[in-house]
Each structure stands twice: as C-alpha cells, then as structure tokens.
Length: 420
Image 1 (tube, rainbow, N blue to C red):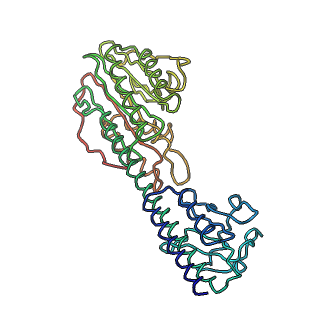
Image 2: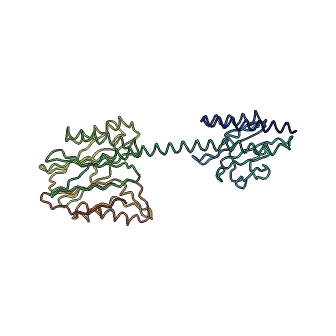
Image 3: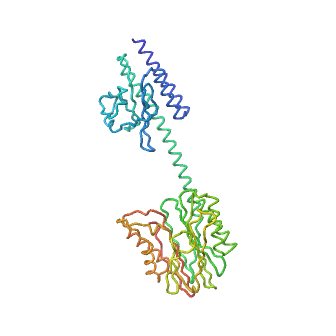
C-alpha cells in the first residue's frame, strides 16, 4: 500500500513538473488543456471528468475538457447558480441540479484564484481505493488551479497588450485629428469665425474647416465621419487633404463633392461614410454657394431672413457616383451669420428623453443673432447643459459660426469653456 501511495505521489510531482515546464514554454491554451487531459486520464487513471471554465469576455461558462462519459458536456450548460454555495470539494449529490447529466460524477472541485471561482471540475473519484481518494481529489484541485491560473494570466497579458495597443491607436488618432483643424480662425472687423469642438470620447468623428481661396472667396465646412478611432481619423485626414487640394484647383462645389465621394468610396468601400456641409462665399458677387451632403442643415441669417440649408446630395461614401448633386446659390447676400453644427447638439436629451432638436436650436440662434459668434457659442453651451441636466452627452459636439459684415465692429473677446 505504501509503495503504491509513494508511486502515486511520484506521478503527481512529475505531472506538476511537466505541466510547469509546458507553461514556462508559453504553450497555447489548447496545449495546456490537452496536457491536463493526458495527465489526469493517462497518468493518474481518472475515468470521468468535465472541466468548466468561466470566460470574462462574454460572461459564460464553457466545458473545456471532458472524457469518460457518453454525453457531450460542451453542449450542456453549467448551472452556475446551483453551485454558488460550493466552496470546497463536495459530493455532487449535495447540489440541486435540474439536469441529470451531472449525476455522471460524484465529486465537484471548485478552482479559486483570489476568492474568485475560475472553474469547476466534475470528477468520478476512484471509490475502489478510498484510502487514496482524498489525495486524488486534492491533487486534481491543485493541478486544475495551476492550469487555470496560468491560462487566466495569459488572458490578462493579452488583455493588457490589447489595451496598450488600443491606447497607442487612440494617441495616434488624436494626433492625426488635432492636425485636421485650422490652427487659427479669422477675427477681423468684417469676418469673425468661431469653432467649438468637444469630442465625446478621446477621439471624435467630427471635423470643421475654414479655407481661404482668394481675396474674394472662402470656404467653410463641417463633417461627421461614421466610426471612431484610427480608421475614422485616417479617413478624415485623407478627406481633409483632398478637400484642400481640390479647393486650390476649383471653386466648383459639385466637382469637389463628386471627387470627395469617390475618394471615400475607394478608401472605405461602404464601411464608413461622411455627412458633410460645404459653403462658399464670394464677397464681390455677394453670393453664397452651398451643398449639404446628408448633414444637419446649417442656418443662414441674412437680409432679415433665416434659412435652413438642406439642398445638396446624400451622404458621401455610400454610392459612387452620387445619384444627384444640387448646388444651391443664394444671391444678394450683403451680410450674414452662418451657423453649422453636428448632431451631438440636436440629439442631446433631457431627463424626460426629449431631444433638443433642430427647431429649438434655430430659435435659440435666431434670438441670439445680434451677439458675437463667441458669445453665441458660450450661451448655447450653457443652454444645452441646462437642458440635459444630469444626462450625459451621446456624441461629439461641434459648432462652427461665421459672421460677415461689410463695416463690422471687432468681435468681443470671451473665453469658451474647456470642456462640457
């Protein structure tokens, strides 16, 4: 008997040594599970076993190893709630399972790490040799703990690497995005432009720009790209570079829009799209040309009138060529206020679930029309914060305003908030 017991202990120690060597060689999870099965089934003559492991990724229990039964435990769901009180090696009969499948076994072995249950081992213990039975189950618990903790550590390392990679991607995307926005915006007696941008996350999907074309003409635009992170930032960077190249070649907005749409289609193949508003003002001709490509309508206040600028085409990057492009020309524009925004403003909700909406936004801008563009933005941010109360913003917030006056006064200085 002692010789048999000694032999068993020697087998167990050798098994732990072999498993440890495999772990140190950074073997994949599948290899560790195979080694686990071979050790218990081949070396230690365990007849029946099922190992269930908890996966944090989808909060589910999965049977990773099973042998010795006629049932496929990979398709049998673990009744985790019934096992909530099992804190040590326990008989299966003490647990109230609704399924008879677990009656194949007589022992449940929980596997813990830092008070967290990582796995359950269902075992058919060797009742013909009861003197060694306690040693067998404790060893199975020890071996299972070594394997499961090693696999858990592998998951943690992968998760850490993934997080570090994601953070690096975010940093790159943030740097790329910061280069898209104009470094300065004009604040002269005749032309004042103000932009406010608050990304909902570290990297947002909004973009705005001011592009002077000649002494008489300049372009204003605002856009919202679908998706976030590096792919969206790179697409928007390519979009901005192409837009600036095109505006140096032509002032034909229809041609610019068609080229930009083809660019997005070629680069994204329908995986990303961009809503876009572009306006071109000619001072000497007193005309305002614009195309709205599926974006929220900008507001134009001029000659005592207020218009929502809807005309244009559909969103960019979904069809190639675009099914239609309608450039709108507004004439006799002596002086004006143009207000552009992204849907982060209009889709902001209050505690009752009501959206701020386009109508409320236009009413607000119209009521504040006599203020400078910086003050309009400041007042609007305060208005939005009062409206939403404790609710969180659901998307990026971007505002772009332009006031042109023939004999205007200097815009008053007023600081914008750093964040929402």
